[in-house]
Amino acid sequence: MRVTMPAPDAANSRIGEAVALSATLQPPPEPIEPGGFDFGRQAWFASLGATGYATSKIQSLNDTGALPWDLRAWSGIDALRARVNARIRAVLEGETGEIAVALITGARGGISEELNQATRLSGLAHILSISGLHMVIMAGTVFWLVRAARICSGACAPLSHQEMGCGRGAVARRSPRCARGS
Image 1: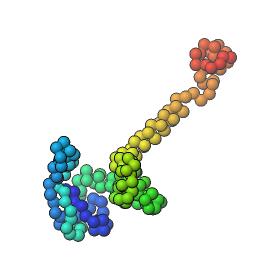
Image 2: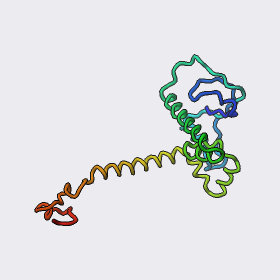
Image 3: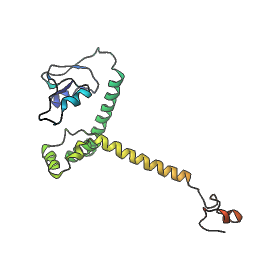
Image 4: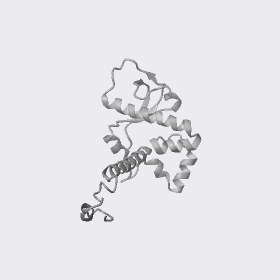
């Protein structure tokens, strides 16, 4: 289920916490037009059976036992994203911080409607909507590949002209790696 609620109502809840609330739920909607986006199909494959909105305050449940391993993993990832978001917002204020949060973790809730409209009109909305998480994964992959290449090239490359076999004498004259002879 996916339940939408006002942010102040969810402010005191922790990620991964078991809660109880009343909600109005409906099955995922069908496409609006033939061949259009099918949220119901996407919801099916995401194991999402209903969407709706909360009609009551959240109540914490204490005696629920341990969470399943996959829910613990996802709640750990969400908790990490929340800490990263808080750190970014502490350093960068206002719209700048909200854009940085959207680019890095994909949380777009703090971006104003005016800025959303401006990015749509300029053709840059896709940058915010592809999810910052994907951009961070890609940037991190490139970073680590470049770092690994630099480490490998430093470790694999000979340290001196002598180690290449390009020293004085007969070995130097026979080595094709030598840039200069003896």
